[in-house]
Image (cartoon, rainbow, N blue to C red; front, top):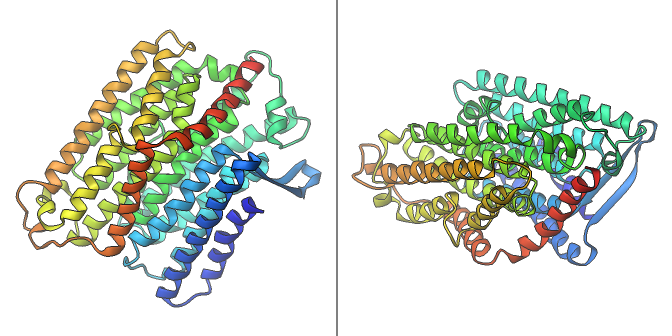
Amino acid sequence: MIPVLLLIIPLLTGLLLFAVKNEKSAKNLALLSSIATLTVSLLGVTYMKNAGYLDYDMEWMPALGSRFHVRLDGMGQILCLLTAISFPLIFVATYYNRYKNAASFYALMLLSQAGLMGVFIAVDALLFYFFWELALIPVYFLCSIWGGEKRIAATFKFFIYTFAGSLLMLLGLIYLYFKANQSFSLEAFYAIQFKPGQDTAIFWMLFLAFAIKMPIFPFHTWQPDTYEQSPTAVTMVLSGIMVKMGVFGLLRWVVPVVPFSSWQLGDRITIFALIGLIYASLVAIKQDDLKRLVAYSSIAHIGLMCAAIFATDKSATQGVMLQMFNHGINIIGLWIVVDVIEQQFKTRKISELGGVAQKAPALAILLVIIAFANIGLPLTNAFIGEFMMFNGIFTSKATAFNVVFTIVALVGIILSAVYTLNMIKKVFYGNTSELTSAGHDISFNVKLALSIIVVLIIVLGVFPKPMLSVTNQLSDAILGRMYLKN
C-alpha cells in the first residue's frame, strides 16, 4: 500500500484544501501533508531493502487493457524520495510568503505532487499519461494566477509546448499499445520486437515529448520565461522535480522500449544536448536576473544528463540516475536563496545587489556550499554523479565521437563555475548597494530548509554508497534490455 499512500495523501489533502478558508490553516495542513508523504516515502526505502520493490496492481480499465498498476522500484524510489523531500523544504522555506487565496495555491501544489508521484511509480502507460497530465495541469493555474506581470504570455507558451509534447506522447503510447497486443503494460512494451528502423517514428514521438519537458535545445524557450514569471515556490517544483519527468521518461519509456533507434540516433541527440549545455551556460554568464541565471543553469545540467543517457554506458546511466536526485536538491537550494533575496530586497537584478554577505552571513555561507555542489566540487553530492557521467561519455562504445563529446561537456562545466562564482561575487561580496545596505540575515525557517539541503549535499558527497547500490542494479537492467533487444 505504500505506493498508493504516496498518491492518496497529497491528492486527498489537496482536494480538502479547496474547502479551507484560513490562510495559516492551509499552510499548516499542506506542510503536515508533505511531512506525512515524506514519512511514507522513507518507510518505502526501509521496506524495499528486503522486498526489492513494492507493487500494487488492480483492475482499472479492462476493456482498454489498462490496469491501476504502480510500482515503487529503485528509480521510482529515488525520484519519489526527491519529491517527498522537496515539498516540505519548499513549504518551510516559503512559509511566510503571502498568496491571495492561499488555500487554492497550496491545494494545487499538492495535486501537482500527487501527479509527480504517479509519474514516477506508474508501470501502466495509460496510467502514466494520466498522472503526467495531473502533474502539469495544476502548474498552468499556479503560473497564470499567482505569477508575475507577464504570466499570461509565459503560461501560454508553457501550455503550447507541453500540450504538443503530451499529444505526441499519447500518439506514441497508443501506437505501442497496438504493437503490444492491446496492452498498456510496461512489460508488454519491453517485449515488443521491432525490426531495425521500424521504431524510429515511435522514438521521435516519445523523445520529443520528454525533450520538451526536460527541456533540451532547441525546445527550451518556454523554460526561462516560465521560471521567471512563476511564483518561486512553483519554480522550485518545475526546476527541481518536474524536469526529471523528462529524464525519467527517457530511461523508463524510451531507451529500453526502442533501443535500436536510441542507439542509432544517439549521436544526433547528444550534439543537440551539448549545444544546449554550452549555449545555456554562455547565456547564464550574461544574465542580470537571478531567476533567469538559475533557469539557464538548469538547462545546462539537463543537457549533460541527456548526453550521458545516449552514451549507453553503465557508468553514464548510473550517473544520470544519481544526478537526478542531487540536481533536484541543489537547484531547490539555489531557488530558495533567490526567493529570499527577492522577498527582502524586492529585486532580482544582480547589478542592483552587492555585499549581501555583510548583512546576511548565514545565507552567504549556506549559498556558497550549495553553489559548490552546483558546479560539482569534490566531496559534494553532485561530484560523483558528474564524474560517472563524464566517465561514461568518454568510455562509450556507442559513438566514435566520445572524446569530442567529453571535451565539450567539460567546457560546459567550466562555464558553470564561471557564472556561479561570478554571481556569488557580485551579489554577496564587495560593497553594499543602496538596496542591500538595509538588509538582515535570514529567518529560522529559511535557515532550517537550507541547512537540511547542505547536510544532504555533504552526506551524499562523502558517503554516496547507498544511492550507488540502487543505481547500479537499475543501470544493469536498463542496458540489459537494450542489448537483448538489439
